[in-house]
Amino acid sequence: QVQLVESGGGLVQAGGSLRLSCAASGTIFSINEMAWYRQAPGKQRELVARITNNGITNYANSVKGRFTISRDSAKNTMYLEMNSLKPEDTAVYYCNYELRSVVLTTVWGQGTQVTVSS
Image 1 (cartoon, one colour):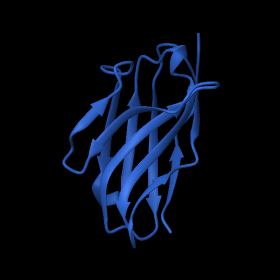
Image 2: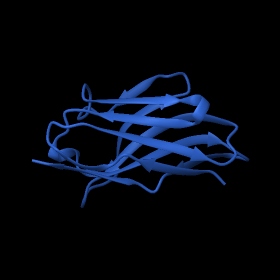
Image 3: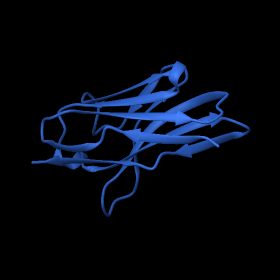
Image 4: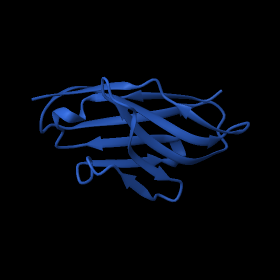
């Protein structure tokens, strides 16, 4: 069974930076796509950024130019560098992998809290 574990969340002042990591464990044959989502209190979960196995990236308009997604395929690990953080970036951040283990499946991490104070 594949598990994802996020780390790197915390409390930061507006304008500050954080780097999130998502590490996978278990049997993984290939990963098609990795993504970061976030969910603020009272709001729906939204896509923040995604990266394909070819390195193609997409970002939500609200984070373009401030966040950078990257991956280390050898380690099955994904990162999210977050700069110029704003209070509206406060949310629980989740990583998501579309991967092939025994079957093709989608796996979620447990989430990491990011809080940006004004």
